[in-house]
Structure formats: structure tokens, C-alpha cells
Image (cartoon, rainbow, N blue to C red; front, side, top):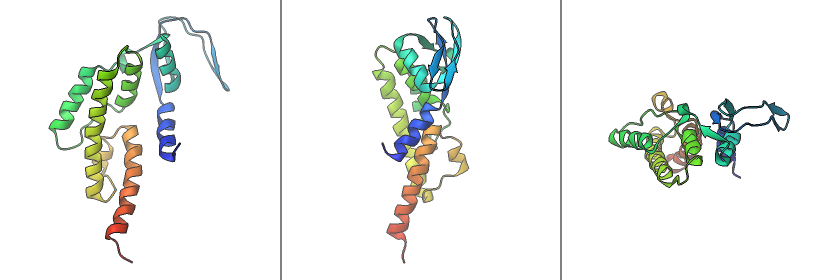
Length: 170
């Protein structure tokens, strides 16, 4: 696993998300951490990997707060493609998308819409990085999701180094 992949995985895995339990759950021991007992209908705040596992198993559901529909993503995509500047999106949109995809029988449409949104945003991030020599302004960084910020940081370092090599002199 690359260091970049490790950074993204650590970022995602450390996210705490709320789920609505649909089954009674006994106390869980995860390493040194003991999580309490929950009853059906309880809302639990859990690390992303645990939440996604419970959703996939049918023991939990996405909360209304983290619900994300394909229409929500398409609306964000429409705004993103309509405007030239990088637009503000929900900072948790990619995590919410993963949670919602895990709860669907056929997540392909949502997955495709999220991919289109991510690519549209990536195109703008790359353009801004190329123009700025690898350093983004606060105006742009304030609009990035945490996942995009990690990517932009890595790409910025690469672009800056590359530009120094191709246009610099010794």
C-alpha cells in the first residue's frame, strides 16, 4: 500500500459516523476499546469501518442526517459543471456516499454519479494546482472535502517539483 493510499485509508477509517441500529447489539470489544450495548432504534456514533460493516450486514441503517440520494449528487454535479470555480459541497459527501451505497441493493447509479462529481471536482483542482505552481489559495482549500485536501496536498508537491525540474535552471 502506498503512503498516499495509507493517508486516505487512515482519514476515512478515522471518520466517526452515526448509524441507526435496527437490531439489538451486544457490547463490542475492538482491541482495547469496549463499545456499549445498543438496542434497536438507538443511534450510535461509530468509526466508519464499523458503521459500514453494520450497514452491510443489515444491523444498522444510514441516519437521516447522512442520507444521500442520487438526486443530491446529481444536483451537486450540475452546479459543479455549470460554474467555472470549484463549488462548496458537503464536507462529508464521499463518506455519506459510501454509507448510502453500502445500504443499497444496486448502488451502481449512485456510484456513477459520485464518480462524475469527483472527476469534475478533480479537473478543477488539477487546473488550479497547475496555474498556481502547486499551491492552492485558501478560497479553494476551504471548498475541498478532507479526501480532496489530502489529494491536493500530494498533487501540489508533485506539480511543484515537476515544474521546478522542467522550467528551473541550475
